[in-house]
Length: 115
Length: 117
Image (cartoon, rainbow over all chains, first blue to last red; front, side, top):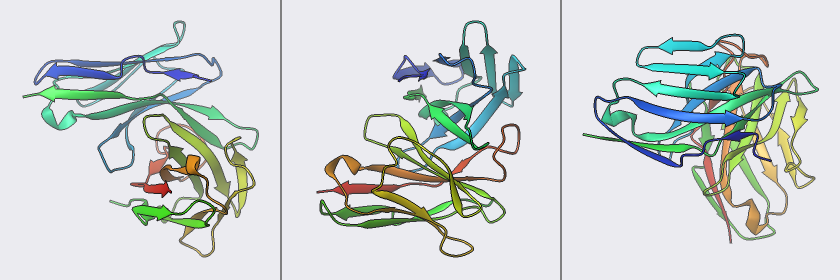
């Protein structure tokens, strides 16, 4: 049941260029989307999020775009830096019957920024 | 900066043994979660916990699993009789509230790698 998909397992980008990571989802009930970054031997670290009522959210070098009609979101990193090299997970927030929220994660994209 | 901590970082156990994974959520957070990631697969939700009871659990969270908040700071995941397929990274997370929106994000710990032999 792959409700959140990241079709690119890896991406290599030159330092200073733009990194674009993509994510697709199937469940139209998702109302909040997040990007997490994960380094080896560490837990996922929250990066940026977007509500379904918006189509863009920006935080410094990171911008997330949401296209609800296409059920697609993307993370842009400009300019990319070697320290950005990590695995990036897209997650969608799904409400539950109890009123709490659980995250549905994609499989991740390994970004490598080349110096 | 406050963070979620987990112990141990790596746990090796024999099949059929009980294990307890420990987490200390961020102190002012009220909602707690366990997720797991089998090697090479995605992070999967296991259970959410609030006010000393389970709020939601996935189909993975069967009778072999239990969670507890034994005191004011710890949050534990117990697996009663481990199976080979329980080998995974287990992440604890916490959030101040259950909702979505800025400030309600779930913060994750570094994980415990469980290896079942």
